[in-house]
Length: 131
Image (cartoon, rainbow, N blue to C red; front, side, top):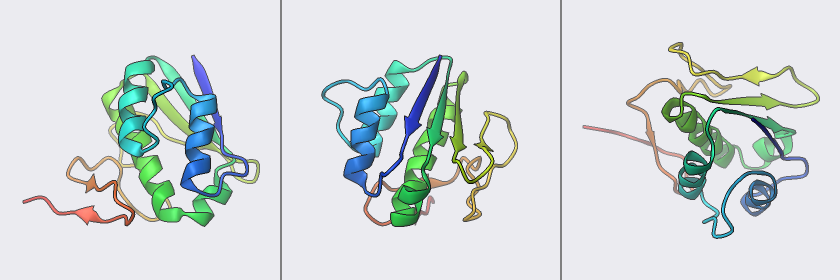
């Protein structure tokens, strides 16, 4: 199965969650936060591809939250073996993620394959230290 999440004209979190509610299989009581997105999608998806399109405007307007959104999708890929995510825009070639063991980086240099990376779902994107 394939789902497409088109983020055209999405510039803030409310618009992101509106798009998610309209385009992805989340329940009507969706909590409109990244924890709820993870929980609801992990219950609803299996053996599918998610294509996130036209994300550039949102990534530019709220880069910290976009990074957390991407990290949530990566966590889903790690936990659900048959779930893949692809980022695609009209201006750029596809930024293709897979479930392989290789390190995967975005423009910020964050290593999404590092199991010791834990990220907060707060308004500020802070790497949390583990002891």
